[in-house]
Structures are given as structure tokens and as C-alpha cells.
Image (cartoon, rainbow, N blue to C red; front, side, top):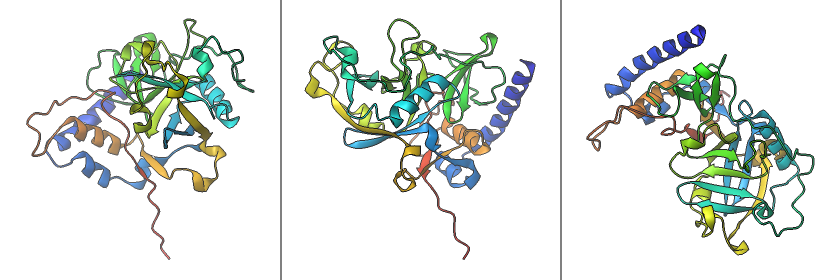
Length: 309
């Protein structure tokens, strides 16, 4: 615990130093990214990234095996065996979630649900992981739902050292595994993305499996369902899922050439500080505050190295 708090304090102090430069007006968020190094960025891991084609567009989903290893392994199997192909978005609740999966999951009249293939039908809940030993880039602003927050592997993270727990909070774009009343009733075959204000009361009550990296507009702009909790009450309202593929299962030429800012770099800390201090001709007041659900990891096309020939 002492070692963790020492690391946390040192990182906070480093953040304060970066924040002073940002507050002085020397750097805007865009300036920080322009000054970044090639090593500050990472490409998407093909084994942990899904490409979903739905609603006429492509949605990139980055999985979080550190936080939900059993669920992520199951989702990989489901995608590899093309379980999601031909399923649909079955629920869009305003200011809450877009959910997709098999329509029979919500229709007791269906006689034969789609086979899960080699994937497991039942998994233990993965609501949190041990916080001890985790090294993450913390935010210095207070959070009402957890003692501390920050980022690990590009994922937003909340932590409670007293109870040795860390978890991915329910921020906009976060992906969770739908479940029934039993805590072990999820398996990754029915997923949802948060499309509204962060419902943080769900934290540590549902297994979170990752986040949307790109393409939220194809999930958030869908028509809202008219049934209870936003479920579509007519089959023709469902938005079909054309396909869901692991990038590792696609030819390299068909994989999105994108890279994300690493969240364990000084550039990330400088970018966060620049976001905390709103400045420029338009702003009258700066909140001097940010929370873990206010920021998302910058993404850009892969920058090709310059040839020296």
C-alpha cells in the first residue's frame, strides 16, 4: 500500500508540473499532440480489437483482457466463430445504452436460441480486479464514485485501495456484458455500449469488457426503442449486425490503420492537463477540473515512417 501511494504521489507531482505549463497558455490539447513523439502512440492489438459492421458503418471495439479475461476470451471465440453475424441491435434506451445480441434473448417465444459454438455459456462475474500492484496514470481531481481514478492500457479505471479493487467505470462508450439477476449469468454474447451520461451506479455490478474506440455515431444515433427499457417492440426495428471480426482474423490490408495515444506517457499527462485548463478567446471560465469520464484517448491514422532512401 505504501509503495502504491508513493508511486501515486510522484505521478501527481509530475502532473502538477505539467499542469503549470498548460495553465500558462503555452500548450493547447492540439499543441500537445503536435509535439508528441512516435513512441507516445500505439497501434491496436489485433487479438483484442473487434470490427463490427452495423447501421451502415464500422465500429471499432477494444477489449480489456486485464479486467475481464474470461469474458474477453469468450468474446474472441464468439467473433472467431462468427456468432454475432446476423444478430442485431435489440435495444436503444435514450441517455443510457445501445445493446446488441440475439433477439431470442429477449423473446421467450423463441424456441431455439443461436448456438454459442465452442464458447462458454456461463462465466463467473468479473466486476473488478485486485488493485494491488497495478501501476496506472492517475487523475488528480476528485471522483464521487471511487477514491481514485486514472487510465491503464488506454482504459478508464477507478480504484479503491482500501478494499483492493480496481475496475473500468461506466463511461460513455464503455462496453459491458449484459446479465440477468444472477451475477454469473453473463457470457459476452449480449453486449451493450453506454451512449448517455455515465451511469456510474452500475460500476462493480456488471462485467465491463472494453470500450468503443471509433464509430460511436453508428450506435448512439440509432432510433430509440419504444418498449420497456428501450427494447424494440417490432422485429423490423432491429438494426442487423452484418459482421463482427477480430482484427487478427482479417487480412492486414483490411485492418483499420489507426493508432492511439499511450496513457503511460508524459504526453498523455500534458494532454490531460491541457484539457483541464480551458483557454482561448471563446472561454470565459475554466472549470480547472476533469473526471475520468470527461476524457477519451486521442486516436489518429497511423503515421507512416519517413523513408530515408
